[in-house]
View 1: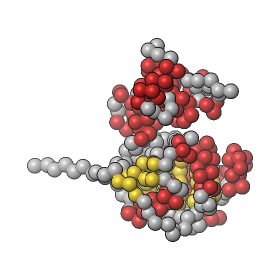
View 2: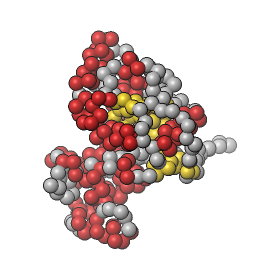
View 3: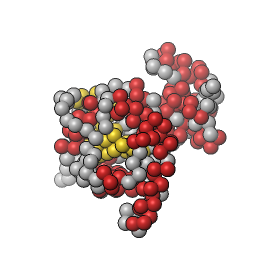
View 4: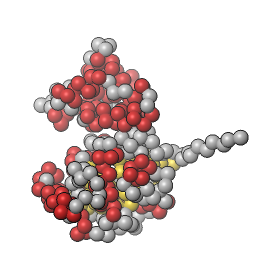
Length: 298
């Protein structure tokens, strides 16, 4: 007789006491990083920014290439606007300094590996908090050699500032002390945390991406206009904003990458991104930041 086991976490809300000190190393996609840097700054949490090192294919490349990559990072500081002075050119100069490493990338796990691995290797006690929009914490943790200290979160542009509740998942190998350290920081930043299973997109963002995808299919098939679809969702189910306006705010590319991540993980047709989303990306109609998405912006 065979036995099957299902790992299950209740949707528990965690609130931890104050008192823990923090020092964060923040990395990932620029728009994600800038917005989250603002959150850290408002809550007086010390932090530095490490630009992505995804051009390096292997950790054991020649040392001079590592030096060049880290030096070039400083040249991109202007991308981070008011937080340009927080960019570090060589994370090795701050070895052991950081309590938390936060990776807010939406790219695939193999494109994020090097940055997370380098930052973590010189901060071996730091808790790693990583975006779980396109892969699980377990997957990235194993790839970047941080399997026992990684947790996944679901944070999106615009929503990370306005949301008060976020999902968090521990990797299958993550030890509890790092779960607690992650919870303590997120609580300090004002979030109520719901711990869920370690799955691509977690819960809130997975559901939202699927709803946006269905709304995009409705537009592509001529069932209704974007304006009518959004009005129906706001009036019919009391959504705070329309799904397509939400997609424009998050970014069409981000939504599509989340759906691609779900399809890769589950290999099911229901996660296939709508062709209209792909076409809009190709045209540069990526949403509000670009001035055009499902709607046009000044």
